[in-house]
Length: 156
Image (cartoon, rainbow, N blue to C red; front, side, top):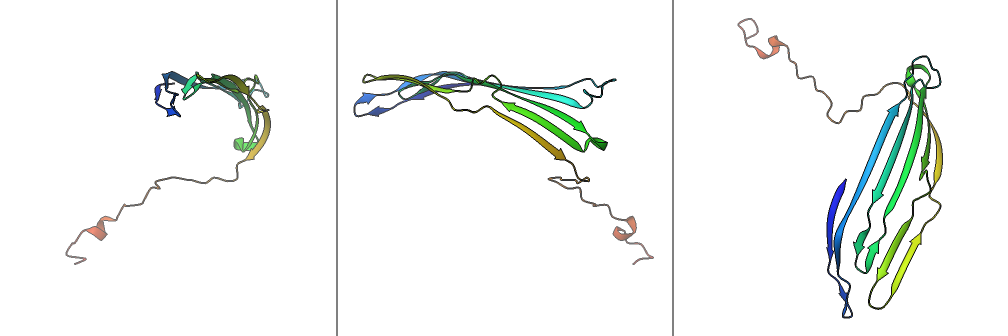
Protein backbone atom coordinates (compact mmCIF):
# COMPACT_ATOMS: atom_id res chain seq x y z
CA UNK A 1 0.00 0.00 0.00
CA UNK A 2 1.28 3.44 -0.89
CA UNK A 3 0.04 6.86 0.19
CA UNK A 4 1.16 9.94 -1.75
CA UNK A 5 0.55 13.66 -1.75
CA UNK A 6 0.81 15.41 -5.08
CA UNK A 7 1.04 19.13 -5.69
CA UNK A 8 0.99 20.32 -9.30
CA UNK A 9 1.85 23.93 -10.14
CA UNK A 10 0.96 24.76 -13.72
CA UNK A 11 0.00 27.93 -15.58
CA UNK A 12 -0.60 27.99 -19.34
CA UNK A 13 -1.73 31.17 -21.15
CA UNK A 14 -2.60 32.81 -17.81
CA UNK A 15 -4.85 29.85 -16.96
CA UNK A 16 -4.07 28.37 -13.54
CA UNK A 17 -4.08 24.56 -13.76
CA UNK A 18 -2.57 23.95 -10.31
CA UNK A 19 -3.98 21.09 -8.28
CA UNK A 20 -3.12 19.12 -5.15
CA UNK A 21 -4.35 16.20 -3.12
CA UNK A 22 -3.71 12.77 -1.65
CA UNK A 23 -3.90 9.53 -3.56
CA UNK A 24 -3.15 5.94 -2.65
CA UNK A 25 -2.89 2.50 -4.16
CA UNK A 26 -2.86 -1.04 -2.87
CA UNK A 27 -2.07 -4.48 -4.23
CA UNK A 28 -2.93 -7.80 -2.61
CA UNK A 29 -1.62 -11.17 -3.75
CA UNK A 30 -3.11 -14.29 -2.16
CA UNK A 31 -1.79 -17.80 -2.80
CA UNK A 32 -3.50 -21.00 -1.71
CA UNK A 33 -2.36 -24.60 -2.12
CA UNK A 34 -5.26 -27.03 -1.88
CA UNK A 35 -4.96 -29.90 0.61
CA UNK A 36 -4.11 -33.00 -1.41
CA UNK A 37 -4.81 -35.83 0.99
CA UNK A 38 -6.74 -38.62 -0.75
CA UNK A 39 -7.53 -36.51 -3.82
CA UNK A 40 -5.88 -36.84 -7.19
CA UNK A 41 -7.59 -33.71 -8.53
CA UNK A 42 -6.37 -31.39 -5.76
CA UNK A 43 -2.90 -32.92 -5.48
CA UNK A 44 -0.35 -30.15 -6.22
CA UNK A 45 -3.09 -27.70 -7.25
CA UNK A 46 -2.77 -24.05 -6.27
CA UNK A 47 -4.56 -20.79 -6.97
CA UNK A 48 -3.34 -17.20 -6.96
CA UNK A 49 -5.59 -14.13 -6.83
CA UNK A 50 -4.21 -10.63 -7.34
CA UNK A 51 -6.25 -7.51 -6.66
CA UNK A 52 -5.18 -3.93 -7.37
CA UNK A 53 -6.75 -0.58 -6.53
CA UNK A 54 -5.64 2.97 -7.39
CA UNK A 55 -7.53 5.88 -5.86
CA UNK A 56 -8.39 9.00 -7.85
CA UNK A 57 -5.24 11.03 -8.55
CA UNK A 58 -4.85 14.74 -9.16
CA UNK A 59 -3.59 15.87 -12.56
CA UNK A 60 -3.04 19.44 -13.83
CA UNK A 61 -6.55 19.93 -15.23
CA UNK A 62 -8.55 17.73 -12.88
CA UNK A 63 -8.19 14.15 -11.71
CA UNK A 64 -7.76 10.62 -12.95
CA UNK A 65 -10.58 8.37 -11.75
CA UNK A 66 -10.11 5.31 -9.58
CA UNK A 67 -8.97 2.05 -11.20
CA UNK A 68 -9.25 -1.51 -9.94
CA UNK A 69 -9.03 -5.06 -11.21
CA UNK A 70 -8.64 -8.69 -10.16
CA UNK A 71 -6.51 -11.36 -11.88
CA UNK A 72 -6.57 -15.08 -11.10
CA UNK A 73 -4.55 -18.19 -11.98
CA UNK A 74 -4.83 -21.93 -11.33
CA UNK A 75 -1.65 -24.02 -11.38
CA UNK A 76 -1.43 -27.82 -11.46
CA UNK A 77 1.86 -29.67 -11.11
CA UNK A 78 2.08 -33.21 -12.43
CA UNK A 79 4.42 -35.85 -13.90
CA UNK A 80 7.34 -37.34 -11.98
CA UNK A 81 9.01 -34.84 -9.61
CA UNK A 82 6.46 -32.20 -10.66
CA UNK A 83 8.28 -31.65 -13.96
CA UNK A 84 5.05 -30.71 -15.76
CA UNK A 85 3.11 -27.57 -14.87
CA UNK A 86 -0.19 -26.51 -16.42
CA UNK A 87 -1.39 -22.97 -15.67
CA UNK A 88 -4.70 -21.35 -16.55
CA UNK A 89 -4.90 -17.60 -15.92
CA UNK A 90 -7.46 -14.85 -16.40
CA UNK A 91 -6.69 -11.13 -16.46
CA UNK A 92 -9.42 -8.75 -15.28
CA UNK A 93 -11.74 -11.48 -13.99
CA UNK A 94 -14.70 -9.13 -13.38
CA UNK A 95 -14.10 -6.99 -16.49
CA UNK A 96 -13.74 -3.82 -14.38
CA UNK A 97 -10.46 -2.45 -15.73
CA UNK A 98 -11.09 0.96 -17.26
CA UNK A 99 -9.41 4.34 -17.24
CA UNK A 100 -11.23 7.58 -16.60
CA UNK A 101 -10.45 11.27 -16.23
CA UNK A 102 -12.25 14.42 -15.23
CA UNK A 103 -10.96 17.65 -16.72
CA UNK A 104 -12.40 20.67 -14.94
CA UNK A 105 -11.06 24.10 -15.89
CA UNK A 106 -12.48 27.60 -16.23
CA UNK A 107 -12.92 26.96 -19.97
CA UNK A 108 -14.33 23.43 -20.17
CA UNK A 109 -15.49 20.32 -18.30
CA UNK A 110 -15.02 16.77 -19.54
CA UNK A 111 -15.84 13.48 -17.80
CA UNK A 112 -14.69 10.40 -19.71
CA UNK A 113 -13.93 6.71 -19.45
CA UNK A 114 -12.01 4.61 -21.89
CA UNK A 115 -11.58 0.89 -21.98
CA UNK A 116 -10.60 -1.82 -24.33
CA UNK A 117 -10.95 -5.55 -24.24
CA UNK A 118 -8.24 -6.28 -21.72
CA UNK A 119 -9.67 -9.50 -20.34
CA UNK A 120 -7.53 -12.35 -21.54
CA UNK A 121 -7.35 -16.07 -20.91
CA UNK A 122 -4.12 -18.06 -21.10
CA UNK A 123 -3.31 -21.73 -20.85
CA UNK A 124 0.40 -22.50 -20.55
CA UNK A 125 2.37 -25.69 -20.18
CA UNK A 126 5.88 -25.80 -18.72
CA UNK A 127 8.27 -28.71 -18.53
CA UNK A 128 11.38 -28.72 -16.34
CA UNK A 129 14.38 -30.35 -18.04
CA UNK A 130 17.06 -31.71 -15.71
CA UNK A 131 18.38 -29.64 -12.87
CA UNK A 132 20.52 -26.57 -13.11
CA UNK A 133 21.87 -24.29 -10.44
CA UNK A 134 21.66 -20.63 -11.26
CA UNK A 135 23.26 -18.61 -8.52
CA UNK A 136 24.13 -14.95 -8.59
CA UNK A 137 27.05 -15.60 -6.24
CA UNK A 138 28.35 -19.12 -6.87
CA UNK A 139 30.16 -20.80 -4.02
CA UNK A 140 33.91 -20.93 -4.42
CA UNK A 141 36.07 -23.71 -3.15
CA UNK A 142 38.63 -21.80 -1.07
CA UNK A 143 39.68 -24.74 1.02
CA UNK A 144 43.37 -25.46 0.78
CA UNK A 145 45.22 -28.42 2.05
CA UNK A 146 47.24 -27.74 5.18
CA UNK A 147 50.43 -29.12 3.63
CA UNK A 148 50.29 -26.51 0.79
CA UNK A 149 50.15 -23.55 3.19
CA UNK A 150 52.53 -24.68 5.89
CA UNK A 151 56.30 -24.66 5.71
CA UNK A 152 57.86 -27.58 7.50
CA UNK A 153 61.39 -28.96 7.47
CA UNK A 154 60.18 -31.74 5.16
CA UNK A 155 58.77 -29.49 2.42
CA UNK A 156 61.23 -26.64 2.85
